[in-house]
Image (cartoon, rainbow, N blue to C red; front, side, top):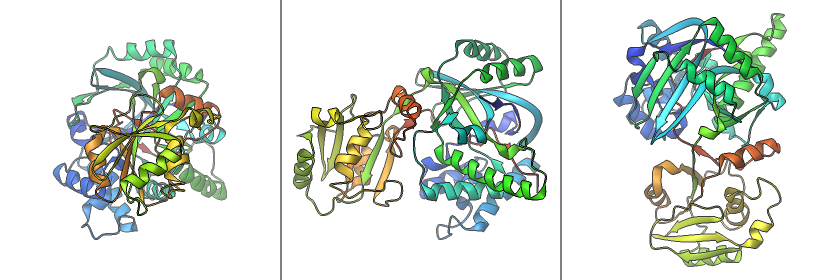
Amino acid sequence: MKALPFPCIRPVPEHAADVAALPYDVFDRAEAAAYAEAHPLSFLNIDRPETQFGPEQDMYAPEVYRRGAELLRRRIDDGVYIEDGNRAYYIYELSWQGRVQTGITCVCSVDEYEQGIIKRHELTREDKERDRIEHIRAIGCQTGPIFLTYRDQPVLDMIIEAAKTASPLYDFTDGEGVRQRVWEVVRAEAVEAIGAMLDQVPCAYIADGHHRTASAMRVAREQRDAARAAGTFTGKEPFNFFLAVLFPASQLTILPYNRVVADRRGMTANELCERVRQAGFAVERADGPVEPQAPGRMGMYCEGTWYTLDASEDLVRGAVDPVAVLDVTLLQKHVLEPILGIGDVRNDARIDFVGGIRGTEELERRAGTDGVAFSMCATSVGQLLDVADADLLMPPKSTWFEPKLRSGLFIHRIAPKR
C-alpha cells in the first residue's frame, strides 16, 4: 500500500503536552466547552471551534469554522506550531495500563481507500461527515489522524523499534494517564526503509476514524474536480492523501461500545423483559452492573435495575456471516429495531452510543428513568478484520479503541496558506 512521509504542521516540543487533545467526537458540547476554556492551547479549541462562542451559537454555522481556521493561523504565528518542511514519518507510541502500541504517522492514498485497499468496517453518519467536511474546507488541513491497522509485519516492527532508540521529539503523559512519545524519522535511508516495507503491506483496515476518512475523500473529490477544470491536476497534490497512523493489529485494545435508548416506547421494565425473552434471550435480574466478558451475553439497565441477556443458541446459529454473529448485530436485529423501534441507528436521535471506558455509571445516568441502556461485550480485533476482509460492514459504533490517538500533534496541510 502507499503510505508516504509528509511535511507536518506540529507543535514545538515545549507545547506538545498543552496542545494534544482527545478526538473531537468524544466530548459532548458542554464537555468540550468546559475543557477548551480550561485548556486554552488545547487543539480542541480548533477542532471544536463552537467552544469559542456562547451555547446559543449554531455550531455548524460558517463563522464557527472560520474561527477554527483563525485560531490555527494564530497558533502558527505565535510559535506554538511550526510548519516542518521535511517529508518525514513520525513514530507514535502510546503507553496505557501496561500496554504499548506503536504506529507510523504518514499520509495514505484516497484512491486506495476508494479501491478497497484501505478497508472499512462501518457505515458513517451523514451529519458527522458534513461537520468534518466543513472543518477541512475552512482550515485547509486534515487535523485528526485516521487510526489504521494492518496484519503484523515482523520486519517492519524491527525497523520501528530501531527508530525508537533515538531521542524522542515528544515525551509526556497526558491527563488520561497515557504516555505519548513521538520520534521524527527524516534520515533518507530510514525513510526509504520504512516506505519500502509499507509498500509490502497488502492492505490496511480503518480501526477508528470512518467519518474523518469519508470526509477527506469527499473534499479530495471536490478539489480534484476543481483542479481538473483548471487543467492543473497531477494526482500528487496533498488533497489526494489523508493523515493516518498505522498500527499492527496485535497491539490494539478494543473496549465495548454500549447503547442507550432515550425511551422504552411506553413499556415498563417487566414488559420490556418479556419482549426480549420472546425475541430469544434468556433474561435474569442481576445483583449489580453487568459488564459482559464473553460473546452472546449483554447487560440491560432500566428502571434502576440491571439484567443479564444471553442470546439463545438458535439466535447464534442463525448468524450466517461475520457481521451477523456480532453481539451488536444480534441486539440490533432482535431488540433495538423490532422492540424499541430503532431502525436507522445512523440517524435516529433516540439512540446514543457510550464508549466502555466511561463505565456503567454513565449508562445509568444517560438511561435515567425513561430510557434503557445496554452494555456489550467488546468486539475483537479478529472479528473486525474478518468483517472487512469479507467486504461487509458492522453496525455503526461497534468498536471503541483505547487509548485514543491525540489530535493536534500532526496536521496535514492540503490547501495553500491563506
